[in-house]
Image 1 (cartoon, rainbow, N blue to C red):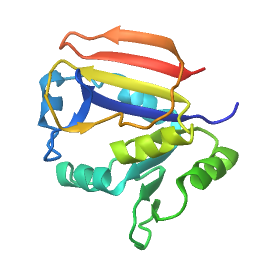
Image 2: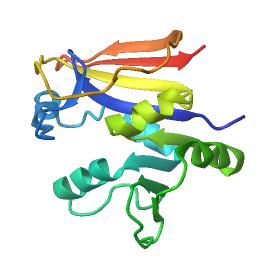
Image 3: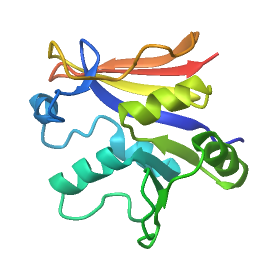
Length: 175
């Protein structure tokens, strides 16, 4: 079975993954003890993580240690930086990276954001599946997940699930 590149991300009902100041506090409105919305199962299905440097920095500002230290992680950045164990700071071509990884990884590839990385991957048709968790809030503005000038994609709904706190998770694959 060929590894897939899968976007797993949350956004407001009006399509924002963060407020204009990069604030993601709105995600807390769906927090519930013992509920991770399938995240643990998803993360166990991947062996590689790709994220932008801003997303990486945001994660490090919120948790005491990087949560994916057991996975090969590529931080997409414009600045060269030395690797830290399994974390590699990648300045090369994103399409080449995904193509290379799909040829050598055993499990799927987790695309963790942010919007710049997602939209760059979409331009080259490099995302195979989407898990999008809709948070029940309208932000009005902020950092939009999907930006202008991406190609049209037809998607097939694999599943949808509504949770008690109002989060709705949609799982699509590109057809």
